[in-house]
Length: 308
Image (cartoon, rainbow, N blue to C red; front, side):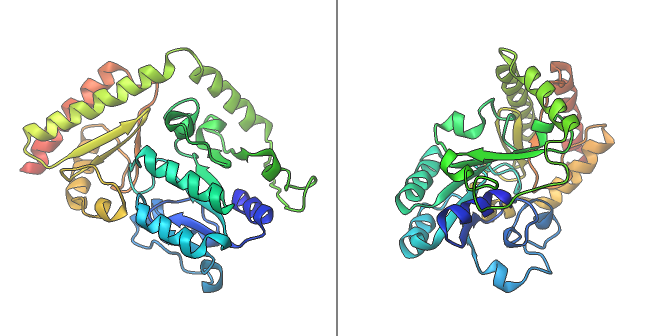
């Protein structure tokens, strides 16, 4: 919400572009075809959002270059900002090609729109520098949360100095919060950053996640179950369909009933997955090779159980 307010203040424009299935918080103008909990419960848009507010939000298909080009060609001069999860985690795990993010960067630069990467979920989880470092595409602003508080409530945004200087007291854009700069959250976040900056941390995390994905793929194949999986760093997605989805429409084609049965079968085995077919999963540094082996073995039994 604050990052988009700054983008509007900086550009003097009103329109915001977001992508179907992406979730960026519960500000009114962002609850338009949102993902996460809104999607899980079958209400991508929330009641209580005035149509006049939602009218300033343009929603595009994730990963559609044609839609992106058409939008900027017709409305580029009115777009204040484009906000995107550079790897979506709120319609499960959907990863765009690097070329798509490069196109987004090029169009925003050409039309003077602010590009915002929502790395609340991916920041410090897929790598120390987030998705932007991994793909080499730099946004104008970045939003961060979750891990930067080390489990305590904390959020942040930052980016280009000329944009951030619009914030009061330097500029005219107001931002405040009761818990801003909370010392306990900040201390927890700094302690977490000390842990993740240990050499080899992300290499080990990525290897652990990929070991889990390979094990689940093999277990599904042995059970004859259509299944796909993908990961980046400690973040992953599993789908009961043959191919990893590239957008929300393809995510919706997954067999959600089978996912629900698999989720409960795994829960009975002592393994707690994200309780929705629309949520990405996460592996942590605390997970050991023995944990992965036990999880894959549990999945073998769960696949057999749901087949019966």
